[in-house]
Length: 369
Ligand SMILES: [Zn+2]
Ligand SMILES: [Zn+2]
Image 1 (tube, helix red, strand yellow):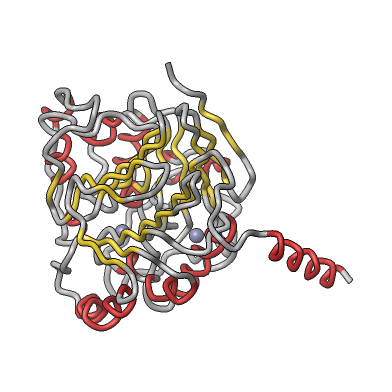
Image 2 (tube, helix red, strand yellow):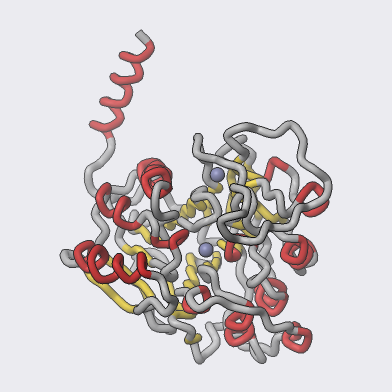
């Protein structure tokens, strides 16, 4: 009986929902989707136009992550993705692309250009799969300074293929006091290529830099801060410590940071110290509890969106160190079950509300002076 009522309700809703993209709200809505230490972040403008940054993990996880992305797409009432940025060619960022493209039309594909890291699976994807996906759409290789058309928003590429915007954004460009203490960080080849994007809606500003690494953070932010400050810092390279230097985090001075970490990826003590000491930071929100934080460094659970398939009743005080990668590494704790997003609803006056999809906890950050 209940099932049939639910079915009737579903039918009623599907009839009522408009088939075209129409404005449904006066907020910019941002869904930070749990793709297990990968990235998938969906922006929905008040105009109804959309931008998706990355598509989650490859291989066996691609279907799971595409399903999770589509859950946010449905919640937002979208019938197409207007713009898809693939920040770089790592499997935790482009992995679900073909699965998402099979579920919903994508109008504009954006990336940094050729893969620069030896990876046969990526090369095969770029030669065989990707061109067929954008054949009936638009494909753009991003360059710093390029605008991406999303009605109602100002979307600007600030980094791509290892290059940075040359000129400061309006109101930015002052000397960055954190540059003096910068310590260079080791990089792999693809992370520094990340497409980084600044999104402005009225007085609200946010930035997503993909997996941009420390040395590139320095190039972008030193000696002068070309970005200025943001309300919300998104992504944070999963909270991994090859990124998230003070020259970036402290100089951007976010009120809120939302970290797309995994169960055992990101949230290391050094990153947590940088975040917790960041001037003006009011809250850090995390996509997962991370074993690499332990109780010592983590935020309260109400700010964390996801637990494990087999919930643990206790979390050790001390953080663990990430095991050496390789065939001998024990698997990270698994979360293939119901996933929850962290949603930001931003208003043009600069105020915004962040909501934890798991527990419904919600906090509004009032417009600044
Ligand atoms: Zn998860
Ligand atoms: Zn990544």
